[in-house]
Length: 138
Ligand code: HEC
Image (cartoon, rainbow, N blue to C red; front, side, top):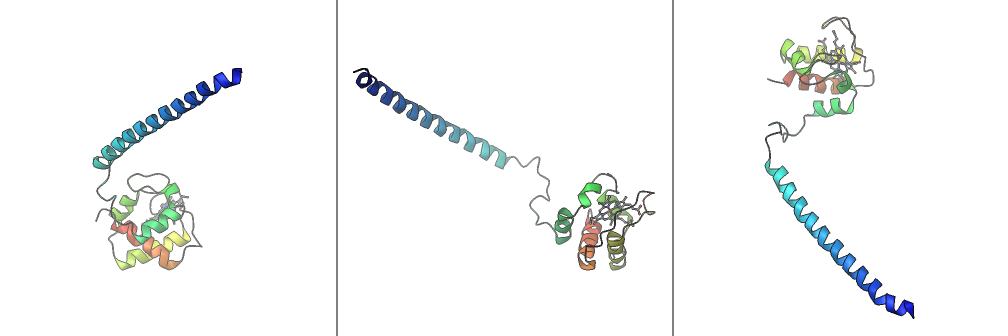
């Protein structure tokens, strides 16, 4: 007997809960899409290069360990990439020289801290990275 009385209540409670939940979801979606479009319109924090396709050298560097020691703008353990770019003109000789340094590592050009050797990086890839570095800010 009790069960029969309760059933409609339980069902309608479920029904309202489902409805309420549905409404909330719809509201959230509306809110989210509002936020989404606001974010999409706000380009102020995005660097102008953000939409440029990444160069092969940059991609290779992102996949390697370079970022542990090199940032584009700031000295970390190794010199800032833009400082390296400022030090060497972007010539085939310098690309070649820096590619060798990327593979063999070593110290002396920026201080006593040595750059780790990268024996697994091919000369071709090292040259891509070097020419990407030397293109920064030029
Ligand atoms: C363990 C830290 C470390 C890692 C990892 C590292 N570097 Fe370096 N890098 C250095 C240091 C330190 C120097 C400065 C060496 C010197 O004084 O000659 C340097 C210098 C350089 C230079 C300038 C060389 C010169 O003779 O002026 C280039 C180019 C460079 N790194 C590229 C890379 C690339 C590309 C990678 C990733 C494949 C990489 N580095 C990974 C620490 C690092």
